[in-house]
Length: 333
Image (cartoon, rainbow, N blue to C red; front, side, top):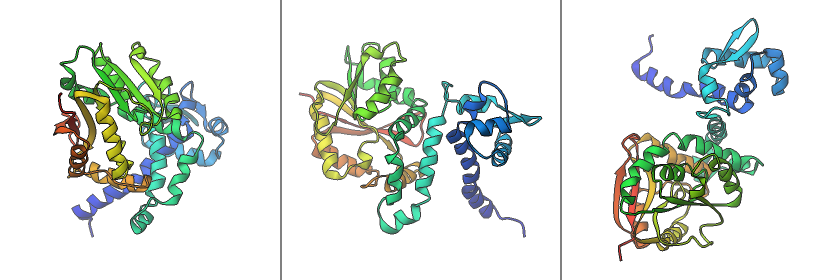
């Protein structure tokens, strides 16, 4: 009996996990970093990576079929595709992002438990206890954010066109990619990136590469407790509210309101609530956080109104069809 279109569709949806596993393991093992200087035979590569030679050969054969490596007389060489995306030295690298997805894949393997109990599985906490977790998480999000940060910044520019020297505060800004994009496009702007000390240590390494790093101010601290400053033209709250219960979300929005100048704007990244992206991110929050959900537009509107914001509106990001910005304003004086 031939497969039906419906069967083809559902099989396509479920079979991608196998190729994903191969690519993620290439990133986790650092195979392309090891091959970047020169091609290597299987035995030497296995020795450097501390893995079984025969099993590595089987993995490399799958990588060859995926276009990640080529092989000649038992010697393996990285391809232009993998050198651009899986080599950590590449400006287009997604190596940390893919390693992060590998961690997330293990979390998603416990989706049944999360749906059954309604809570984050206890085993999903263990990844965050790793010594290198903060660095991996920050670098992984940076590699993803830098691909879209200029588009997000371009959408925000009209909010700042009346300020001669815009001041921006990026709460939980972590990797700093969005602040970098804004400051790059606004030569007189200054951005303050606020996050916890272990995160800021990674941020500092990332932003020092930019000629305008002096306009990127890094503030270590807890934005629920520590002073944030005042008279900002724009505040960014990207991803932060997804893991907060209503009481803490309201407190943070009130603190953000107080940090803005009258007429200043708050921007929150959001997804089209009819999209698969929104549904999957909401499930990811169930798997990854104690409070576990992405607030809806309706919830956001209620929270923002309660915190004193007005001018609530949605701003599309033209190059990101399923994403948008929720905007709200501290009322002008």
